[in-house]
Image (cartoon, rainbow, N blue to C red):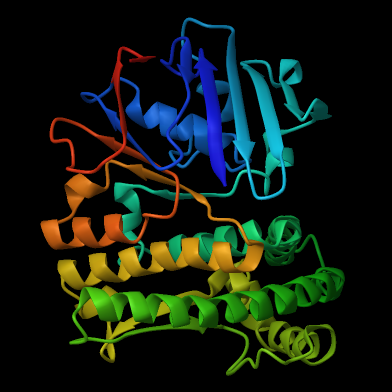
Length: 367
């Protein structure tokens, strides 16, 4: 998958950007606060994902602008596609089209442009809280199974209803039996999410362990595993609609007393985690900075390789100021693994010794 043209105007500080990227490496140089990351963010937003900086849609429009205009043309193994978006501070005025067909939301673009984003914050993937790893798994799965994204959102909505009911039970406004309607729905969706996450985690381990073996020179081994608060063990052959759903519902019922006292749901996929072990030791608790960064590199590269295997398309890689955070050996490793993919790489003063198209961003303008 290759981006053949990209344009942006009014997206944060970007002005009249008109870029024909290299199908291989694109090095985007510029000082801090000039718009390098904004350019990566604009491409990422056109993949249908939320801003990796947590920016709300209305705030993607520049301070002194009413609208932000984005355009992108991409080619995959089958055809050329065109994305156009006009974003407004008033969401009702947004205009988004895919190949001329109107989309209500940016999320309607999800799955068309396949991207893998790597930012300095991702280096905390192994050291951060469990919700960071859950979000990572859900995004990875959604890129392969776009419908999964809606399932995960439905689960979150029902969970919010169940938690509200638990609060009301504490206050005497609801009865314990009122939980049954939510428990049934939560069990069905949660069983499916548990199985899909488990399947993906196993594949992630297969790819990432080989990559980590290369980074460490075979001196250490990386192990990944899905940790469920509902199931002791999940087989990838389990029937989520029957066996897993039944067990999930039983677990919710068992935890009901604790949930009422706590005022929230104490078990479920919203409390699960992805364990990261290096030679049998928890990376989060005992891993060195170098070990954790190597594990993250392996996991992010594995994400790209799995996406290629599952979809048949090499994803576009966005490296936002990551190389400056890595030592020389890890920089060289990640660059060597991205030779067959289109890469957008941002950097400040020191430009990596990599062949590719080089552009400079200054005050939101691209040269």
